[in-house]
Amino acid sequence: MSLAETATVTLKSSRRTARPALNRLERAERFWGWVMILPLLLGVTVFYLIPFLQNIFYSFTDLNQFMRWSSISVDNYLNLFEDDDFYTAAANTLFYVVVCVPISLSLSLLLAIGLNQNIRGKGLLRTLLFLPAVTMPAAVAMVWQWLFNKDFGLINQALGLLHIAPVAWLSDPDVVRISVSIIIIWSSLALKIIILLAGLQSIPRQLYEAADIDGIGTLRRFFCITLPMMVPTLFFVSVMSFIEILQIFDVVFLMFDRALVENDVMTVTNLFYKYAFYLQEKGYASAITVVLFAVTLVITLIQMAIGKRLKVS
Picture 1 (cartoon, rainbow, N blue to C red):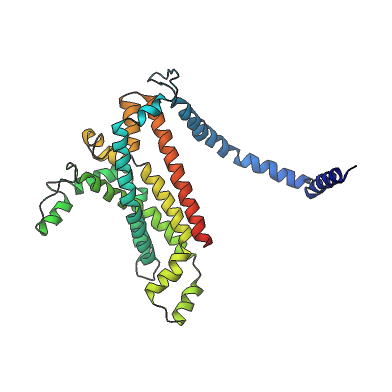
Picture 2: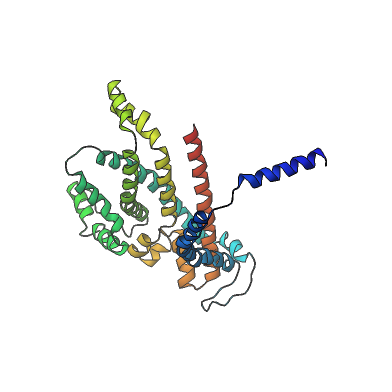
């Protein structure tokens, strides 16, 4: 036997010895572990994985309202990138991402820091700030429609006290995207505050006590202790925010007329709804969702890579 063959046999035998056989208790634990997660795996497979694969398949077909299809190759994707409506929806969605993500993240962090202090009634404040997370989108839309009403809305009444002319928040093409951004920011604060508050409470108190002994000011303590320790949580919240806003649908659909939804405030998900349920071009709508998934995946991977690099450094 050659030296190479001897080394191969030795390596295989060492691998066999490195994996001892499972005893009866370990086999039972592994079996019942799979049994316990089987319902979840079935649910993910039936309601997520299979529809996801079907959607990718249908994006290469001419699927109609009767679920009959014929193969048309990549024509849906070629037509998509020649569609002016798609670029309009993509531009609107990008606007919401650029405006809403940094503002909501900054406000959430500031509010979480405030709620982390020893202030009176902070339990009630936490409850009030969390209410938007458990409020139905239809109720949110109704309330904001009333607040944004041009004639008797509270926002325009407050502006009137400052001698500012009423603003057509829900019909002026130059203002409607700002209106949507305000609602997105307000409704997305609650869950972010809870997550960031949990991250703040996980920071060791000894670091702040040492900073107090050294006479470090509040602002420097924030940039030298709080912000570096919150990097993993902040990146998780930012990834969540990007995904949430890229998929925004209900606010736009419930609050604005169809003419505005199809032009000035239309998002990519609204464009999908238009082709899937109004125009009954389901294959083309599937292509839209596949592109949205690809963009979301790329942005998420980039954010995760940046987050890992900053965490290491």
